[in-house]
Image 1 (tube, rainbow, N blue to C red):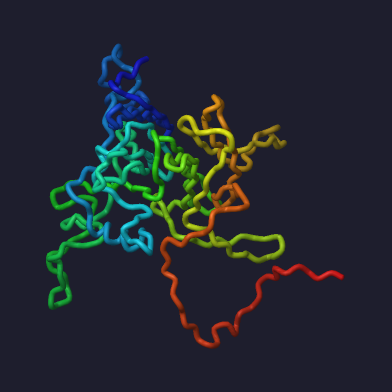
Image 2: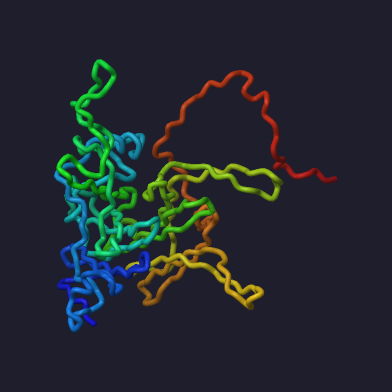
Length: 387
């Protein structure tokens, strides 16, 4: 069987909600996809039997191409998602015109949290008003199981202003306390056009090269909480870099530090708080070799046998990530990382890179003089003295 599509240079495949999706990039950077048919779709039943291939025709992926940016989002991101010392330097940001900025390089696919995530590299000569050159872009899609189409994620905005955080300026309060020229939230504008989610640009991931990156999404021990791990080759430093970010409640990226409570052997019946950085960045040193081609990472689980009443069964054990890196020696370097319950990876080096505060809302808080009077110990973390 031949899935014909001219000029395709790179392909990737993923299974999502029982369907197989193939995504390809052509030599111009355009992205196409096809979906394996189940045999119940109208497109399958209406095709003559001798012409059926079992696959949908190739379709171009629908990417953001709005006439202008949402200024309310830009203002909010400039306030919350930039470096505190340089508000023109973004950590991540929304992009609204990324249809024609994809590099002619492989894309990476993730199935998770009800969506297909498509990660792609921006062009080296990308228009700076549309995307930062050689950085990482991500878009979310919902797979329509009846039409086998990848539908861009819908977004709620104000219907008349077409902005996410600001209603139309003419909306104002009336003397009786009501509102005039009401602008309500909706998935569509006043003309019935749908609002689609903007591309998320991970500006902190720089100097990508020929699509040499790989993305893994791992679960944590918190319900419906996940963590992203992005392995990427930095062409300027000529190093492999790992960037790990917590997944937000909306399914994108949460760059704020957070605290978890975990048990410790030395503190019986007590949970000890531990702070985890919002962004963890590491450089992977593979001594004696150079990266020669695109890398690949995947999540896997160790298995162990256990005797049950029905006989021996395989049970899922520890979660790990395997990273495979082609080298200039003609072989492949494979690294395996243990995944902790909080989704972070095992320490790579005892001499870790120093912590940097990119943005902080810390401030002094004045407490009443008796605030600490009623504090009671809930656990003793000091060992029992022995003599």
